[in-house]
Amino acid sequence: MSAELTYFEDVAVGEELATPAITLTEAHVNLYRGLAGEPVEDPGAVPELLPLCLSTGLGWRVPRPPLAVTAFLSVEWDFLQPLRAGDTIYGASRAAMRRPLREGGIIIEDHEVVDQRGVVVQRGRFTFLVAKRPAADTPQKGAVSP
Amino acid sequence: MVSYAGMTAPGRYFEDIQLGEEYESPGRTVTETDIVLFAGLSGDYNVLHTDAEFMKQSIFGERIAHGLLGLAVQAGLFTRATQAYATLAFVGLRWKFKGPIKIGDTIRLRARVVAKKETTKPDRGLITLERKVLNQRGEVVQEGETDLMVERRVG
Image 1 (cartoon, chains in turn orange, cyan):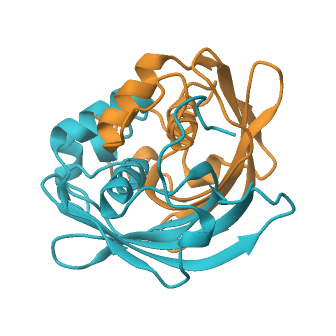
Image 2 (cartoon, one colour; image 1 turned 180 degrees about the vertical axis):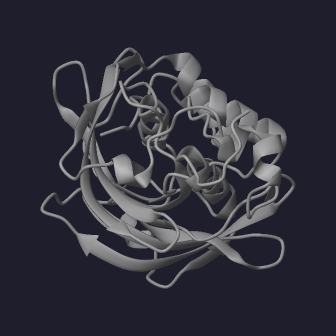
């Protein structure tokens, strides 16, 4: 893989990241409802799962290469406050735990979704399986330079 | 909390929902289009979901659906599995992604009411559902529990 990624070794417990913000719109609500296959009763009401879905993508827009996730293992999530189209949210995360495995390692991240008033509207925890830095990325004995 | 003024859905109240009730949804085939749309909506462009060539070399052999897409699809399938609840809010989720959902896989939801709890507010109660997302081979690809705040008949 050529693009730079954040590998298991690069993650330090306690590391905190904040994402840019995104304004939730009726377009987001309608796209999400259409994709999920849920009736749209009120296009202004943000489906609870939508901010959770957006928080993974927002996590890409931080001053760090994307995490080399090889599997998303689990999520625990609390939906604390309702959101409306027009609300603006951002994500804040903290690496809470890392455990090396033979192939890669487990990273647990604590996440918060915060609205424009600074209120934590959703909160939870992601568990990822993350790749170790591939051997090809480090100089190898006998490797031939291109 | 999330109820819309004037749109009180004729859903089933807390009292009507029995512990142990089970539901099974119709199937839904997850397509490449679903994955592309979800990547665009969420902004999650992980190679797992977007790079067919890279994924040929992976243990999956092809692109797989975002785990959260599976979660969203099962939420939609729930609305087709049973009569709507008089849901006020979706309050909690504990969820495991057990296996890949590949392009063309057909998933369905099996759900069961595993807990009913009264709350401090007399107009609502908490319903916990155990949910399993199964593929066309009957393999559980996702499973977990969801907590829904549901209106009581006597508010």
